[in-house]
Image: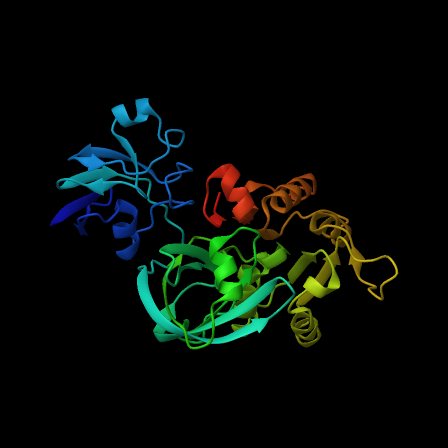
Length: 355
């Protein structure tokens, strides 16, 4: 049975299937309701039910408290309809955002590369191209497991149509992680899989026309790589700096690619940094954490730039502190936290959490 969902204040009317969540219906219609965890754990997608009956689903009692339920609030990522329903949601408008409906994309694993001892590059040839903005992510349905995992798209959108028939995701194996363990140990070339997307509001705000600083750690390089490749492919002429951190040289993937890009493009600067490289190694680049390298690279502060951060939560927090101490503030800092399986057990969140 299908019901009608009305989203105020825009007045959009959607048909929603039995068991389909409010958030899924909205995203598939190209309507962005702010969201983060996707599993009722963070409260980002909270909306007001104005009329009709809903089921709260698996919404956490911390993310949606009892008094909020009594006041007619619900979490769009978990709520399903029992009747025609009208909700009120905070619909974000952004001049740089494309309203791209979420869709299912069947495909086949075309290549698997060992990028580092712990990170694999998985390439998927889709049956039809996906349209996305650089920085967005997909949900990967793990074959035979009944679970999905979120991974940023590591390739740039194809020019000029901004679509891609073969997509790339970079997957770091996580101890005890069911999804990443399967991908590393069992997934093989030729396997049929399905991805959903695109998701997320992590993209370059080009209309601001400011120099860009990308700060990445671990497999959090995926989104910044997609963004940087897209910017260089489309002729962005303002300065771009990538500060990328790993523990050691063996984990520093796509290093040669970025060195070559810096040599080719005068407006692109690449600053790799290693936090646990043996002291007697031949590494002659920066040593330390990403926020240390950023402070060294910008001794006069960060004022006038835009910063894009992607990596483990502790890295993000340290980088935000460094940026703010360097006189760059909230309006010019965009970030995406990469949540490991261990983190998820503590914060009860999926792989990605956009704050």
